[in-house]
Image 1: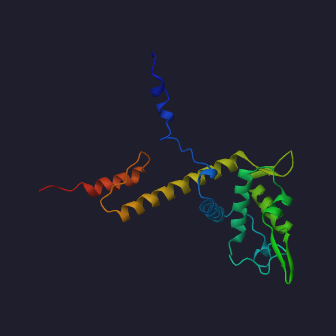
Image 2 (image 1 turned 45 degrees about the vertical axis):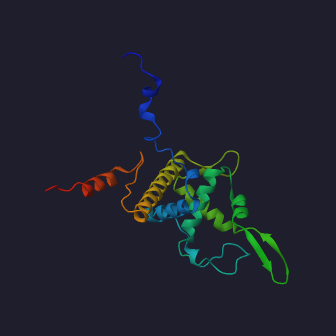
Image 3 (image 1 turned 90 degrees about the vertical axis):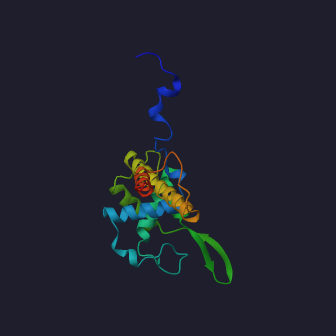
Length: 198
């Protein structure tokens, strides 16, 4: 085969061809929305019967107004376990706690509902996204990490395409440039620009 320069030896592994997008690289709000939509669309997440009746902590006055709050909480919990593994029910109650307003008395911190945190973790365990950590708490499985990175890649690509299309809308005549421009958009652009000359 012979010797090849180092620059061409690993050409197939160049950064322009590798996805390389993880959960840490994308906007957290967009990622949580996308993951919640994925969990809802899959229909495999076991949602308790009492989701429309429960408060999320003693510091709350009302139940959540969003009807999909369980999916959003599950997505947020999985994202938190991706970033900091080894969290359990107690950690989740501290994360999702808030200020308990005591009227004219000073406000104090109050933890979130343990039952909600427990049910979310149990539902995610049934999906095989998380598992019990031998050191305590829960951690992501390899399947869960793979799913989260795949969804993060989809979110990143969608945001990039929206940004490029916004640039084209603001500056007509500018063709998006870049090595990572999606192929299907490139074909559409080529079809539009090639016209028959008389």
